Image (cartoon, rainbow, N blue to C red):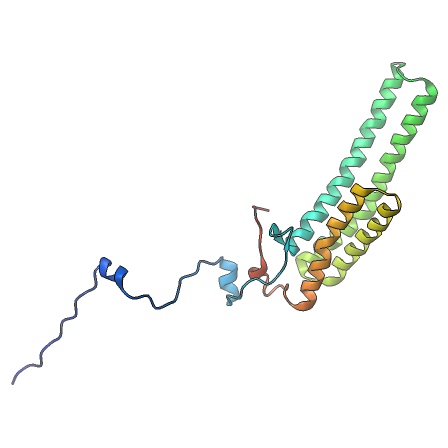
Length: 198
């Protein structure tokens, strides 16, 4: 009885594997969050400032900056008021000038303290809404920025107008993304983006 011939197939070497025809598929490196989400859809959301970060992250950043600005100016004018008081003690100002300048500095300090007390909870709501993908807290923060836009417009404060409008912008886009379904907790791993470590 004769045994059937055995066909021996050559074992492909590393060079042979490199020369093998490509089947058209590619390996894609993804973050653990995207892999866990179980889908590989491309990001559809608008990026803040043309690619800096996603809108959820932008809301958190601009609200933190807004709080920091209010606190900075409150401390700044407190130091200025103290400096004016110290200068007057050294007789560098006359009494009338000293009282006028000190009054202006104290008013500015009080204005920024009040602004910080009002805006910090509103900024906190904006950040909470972004973190939880909830529309109404972001809407409240947006209304506060819109009021600020109107106030700076009437005051003809171009710098303040630009800043308030810039801070309102990610809130508007984020709310549109929530409504359209582009931004949600489920697909945020796909939309997540940052140009730095923030």
